[in-house]
Image (cartoon, each protein chain N blue to C red):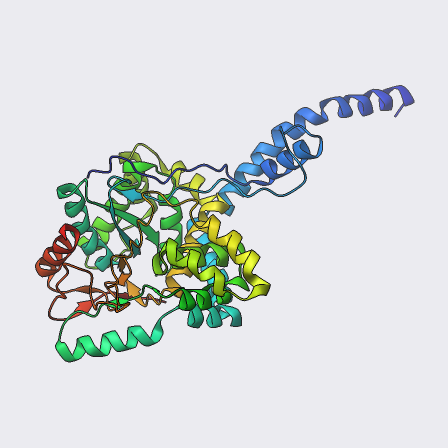
Length: 216
Length: 196
């Protein structure tokens, strides 16, 4: 994987009863510099981007962590970004589909940069290997993946305790809904929805078309 | 109990209460945190919230007004006849059309989730220069709100200006090509995972 400059910063602290009470009290007593009783939005979470963020051509993908076709598309895109590092980058957008999917998306946001992609690719790898069956994504397996990416099961739990990350996933899902995505992956490039019916079965031709488009 | 003993017990209880509270609170918080972050329960709560959001009448109206259902249907029909992959041009090139989008969006900008979702759609469908030009055609009542939102759209974008929509997708005559330059639609079927 390339990913010279990537995103996915986890910037906000978990919102527990204690932190909310503590920050509320601190604000009330003027203990936060510049603090006021006005509600402040938490700092935005940077979007995960694979490849060079300054690459001039950006592919935007609404994907599901439990979708084998999303996994198939990322096999293609990962190689394209590796082969064309100064040309193309890929932006991840969340589009959960199945029952356990939202927590996977939010959990993945506990990882930054290459580790985000590392975690997501491990998850998608299981789904791809099992032909779309995501039953193998057990807590133990996810814990293993988290450890392999320098975290632990606690990394996932902490991310899942952050309302800002849940809000981000919901915003992406809502945007995907507005964009008329009815199947994942939803791939967009420069004013075109390239996969309204999913990805083409002929992966070799699809790969060649994407490369031709990015070279033009 | 003699008054002296009662007084001592009371004073001692008061004295150690903060320590006891400090011990009890983390234990309670830990239990609560585990319960609150059970991934299955959290995902279920997410879907419940999503169903409620999707069922809101204004969401359906927005999906229609900022979407491109007709263009998508036409593209899929045309692709099926040619037995190639469907591709939908989604860019809004004319400022007057962009103004219609912005007018539709204006009513819902006070909802943060909707506002941010619409910002994503706007950045993918309307080039920055077209958005600027569209302001002149936006309804007077929502002009100021749209201007502010429009300016904010540039924030949070990682990469070069126009990274999502360079404008090169349209010809000078305003005609929209059926596929991006250099892209050959792939023959045969397409498959994806259907939405819930």
